[in-house]
Amino acid sequence: FGNFANFVGTHYLNIQEAGFSYDSNFVPDINPDALFRSSENLITGELVGYSPRVILVDDNFNGDKIVIPKSYDTVENLDEHSVKFEVENALNSDLTNQSNPFLDDVRKNTFGSDFSKSKCIYKSHYNLENVAHWSEFMQINLHRKSKILIGKELSNLANYYHYGIMQTKLEALWDQIEDSIRFFAEECHNFQGFQIVGEGNTSYAGMVNTALSHLKDEYGKKCTLFVPTYNYPENITDTIVSTSLYNTICGLANAQEFADLIVPMSLSKNLCPVSNQYRSRRFKDIKYKEFDKYQESAVLAAGLEFLTLPYRLRSELTDVNMSDYCLINVLNRCVVTAGLKMPFPILRNQNFTQFLDKWNTQFFDSLSPFSDLEMDNKWSHILYLSSKGITQRYRHDTITSSNDKECMDLLNAFLNTFYPIKCIRNFNSKCLFRLPSTFPNVLNNKYNLTNPERNNYGRISEFYGIGCLINSRDIEQNLNNLYRRGKNDVGKLQIYDDSVKFEYKTTLERLLNLASNYSESYLL
Image 1 (tube, rainbow, N blue to C red):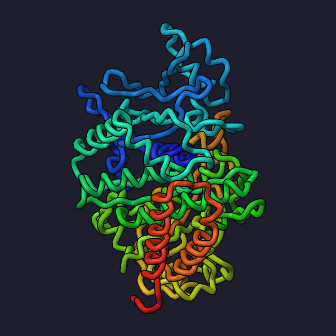
Image 2: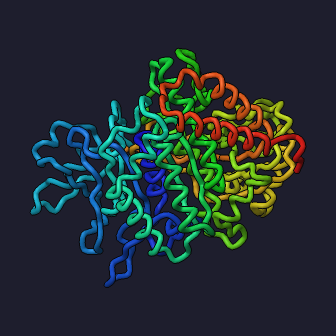
Image 3: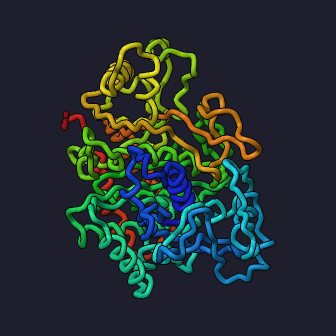
């Protein structure tokens, strides 16, 4: 839900697509069927393509004649060699107005001569700049029911939470959303639940909570994972601060009633920064451009890949569904912190055990504005650890045969020296973190694990990585701070409806109750 959320979602789906296998002899341990529909050639039985069971809600899909991935409904329409695109409300000749290296190759495959037997070979990496819309780097194929156009600008920070709720009362729009949800839900063979990525500080927060309420009513036994994302413009005014604060409080306080797990994600250190005092997170091995949606969303998408990994794994030993995964929510502590160590900074010639022994700084980088995941944090209780390629790296160093459990036991003992963890669960994929070709060049290539460059098409970038979810008591302090700011700034809000003001006070009480769930009185 929302423009920035769709930036994150597009990178996330591209990451999924980069790890797919079309070879029946190679079955990766990440199951694509968890999130994607697959199509196969009915004659040969070969996989032809994937399309996600996803709904994208945004103000604008077309922009200035931006190309959109083509909708596939039948096997006959699929092309296993290239990504095909359609253009909405624009002639083919108008595509010259939009250009980047990736779209140039798309045009060669899409609008080339029908008699040409040759296809343009897509590069393994595109250096894209000035990306204005998420559809400019989307590599996946969408079903026609995946795209829902709002027609109103909700992603700016001038509109309030209730404006998003008002949009859901438009019968035609809400019927379209319900119909798309029902379509994808009814075709699932092993329906686990929903994962929602939405803008948390715009009026889309109101639309998300309406959707969460609907899912609770219609699919009450299914799990719901909600990831509110927070993005801020370069110039933050007092009006933006007050509106963003109001939307954030209403979004979080009301979402707790319907979502099983809430994972706020942002590259801002503060959930609601003060005017002209924005502080972004800095990482040792990730360099991104501030206020660039394309690059910032890529970092968050990498974190999203790890935190959703457990229920996408194809493993008999760690067969976890979304309901099991959401058990990290104990005592109604539904808001948790996401962390990332990407790339995992180990070189080819380093010994894994010795590498951990020499580590003496903060391990995880926080992707949530609620916590910095500092080493002196005494309140961490539950940790979910998701890794890609780490266990294979550990086996490389051991002389005798080893298993995944030995590697995780070593890593768990290491993490216990940094955080007072009372419970830890491990989820591992043998596959490396493979970057899609349209992922920005933000990771330290010193830890790139791929072979030397392949001709002029470049190298496929792969990295080791670890992500985590932590349910910690330090969230209480941050929620209380948010409550105090919301209570003190209520007079600055340009809301003239007394009923809305009364509802806001009730919402503040819900936020305070959520914070009390993390109280020291309730020890695990």
